[in-house]
Structure formats: C-alpha cells, structure tokens
Image (cartoon, rainbow, N blue to C red):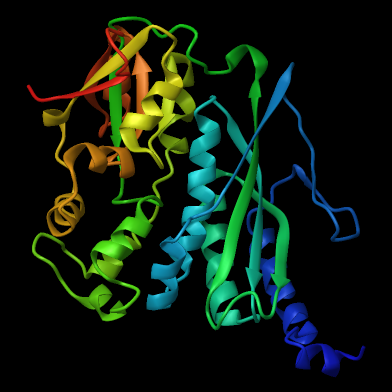
Length: 340
C-alpha cells in the first residue's frame, strides 16, 4: 500500500514523521546524563546509579474526561502537565524519586495543534519534577475517534532505596494528618461536572463566569493537577504515610494508608475549599458526603506524621495545615468527617 493509499485510509505518515521530530525536540529538553542514546527509537534507556538496594516504583494513569473540557476549549498544554503530575504524585506516596515518563496518545487523525501543546505541557512538567520524558507512542486510529477527540495515558517509573520506602507500618493512634492544598479539581470528578453544567450539550457554558470564580468556568476546570514532589522530596524521612487524594476523595483514599484497626478523623473547619466546590454542590444539589467521595475538596495530598515531625513539616512546607488525626477504629467507618 502506498503512502497516498494509507493517507486515504486515514493515516498520514508524513504528518507523523513531522510530529515525531518535534516530539524528539521536546523530550530532549528533559534528558540528563542518565538517559542513554542507543542509536534507535524503539526503546528508551536509563542508567540507574547511586542506590544500594534500589526498588523501582511505577504508575500508569490518564486524565479522564477532563480531556473533553480541553478539547471543547482547544487548550491542551495543561492536560500534558496534568498527565505527568498525577503520575508523579502516585509514586511519591512511597517516597520515590521520579526517573522517567512515557506517554501514549491515540488519535483519529494527527493534528499538530493538539499533539504539540500536549507534548509541550508534558515537557514542562517533566523538567519541573526532574523527570526524563524518555519515550512513548503516538498512534493514528482512524474511525476510532472523531475530529478533535483522542485518548491519553502516561506511565512513570521511579526509584526508592529499599530501606527508605514509605508505607503505613509505623502509623499510630494520635498521629496527625497534614493536608496540602489542591489547585481545584485536579483530574477527578469531571464526568459529574459535565453533567451538572450540561457541558456536552451546551459547551458555551465553559466561557461563562459564575459568582465566586475568578475565571471562566472552563479556565477553572482546566487548572493543572498540582505536583507535590518538590514540596516533599527532602522531607520523606519525617513522614509515616502519604495519601494522594485523587478519585474517591478523602473518604476512599485515606483508608489506603491506614493500618488495620485505625481510622482517622478529618476536621472540615481547618480549611476552606476553593469556590468551585460549593458551586458544584449547589448547582448539582450534591449530597455532602458524595462531594467528599468524588472530589478532593481542596486537599490534594495528606501526610501522616507524629506531633513533633508534623510541626517541623509545617515550618518547611508553608501551606501544610493540620486537618485531623489518626484514631482507633470504632465501627466500619475509616474516615470520620467532623466539624469543630
């Protein structure tokens, strides 16, 4: 089959070659001395050094239906940032250092105005966290996707010294919960948000301004997923457990780092969720408990530490706040939401 015939079938090889050149340029901006050149582009090579008993940590995830918001507005850099940051956040829950990142983009037809901003956002986020964008795949799948729709996923690999892995082994009754603020919804709850604001049928609502928001609704929903690596990398030794508050909110994610027999109480008066959350709850008439199960509600990461270490962490991480405490589990509830 000729290139012309393949193009007629929906796959443009020349466009793919052009975009690949730009991908190489973006990726090279994130490479340090540990990334090895091997003379081919089938796989990426990374030299691991400086560890006695290294343990590799990996995570794969996507940005969910936040993609639809980006497509409707035509703004893709932030989605690239999101893809890297949410995966970095998952591996730092074990005390890991991010090493390298790989992306997968599947589109109906290659569009440089979509692919290049995505890669630019990934490169920005990778450089910010010291992660090498080492490879990936941009696949053309005509007939699978329409116009500007596509699928996006990322995989990150990190490393931690075996003796320094953060788990929940030492979490004890009385330990404190330190919350780190999120930047809006991050990458969860967008299917519900799209339904509440009728976005799919009325995408113009994304350009409207609502009381309490400093931006249009679309700009608010595209705020990037905050990366917490730089905040935490030098403080791992002070932390007993880390929970990334993603899908499932505080209610579903906190039990993942609590040992059997322990629960936690979260004081909801210790922070004020950003205005987007009460707006969603009001317009959608969403139950209070469901809000805390679907959304992060303003807390993107929770650290567990004893009283002394929590005080030191607050001095070093200015926006860290005590939001609760580990308690003995009294019933089926692992997370108790309370008011002072």
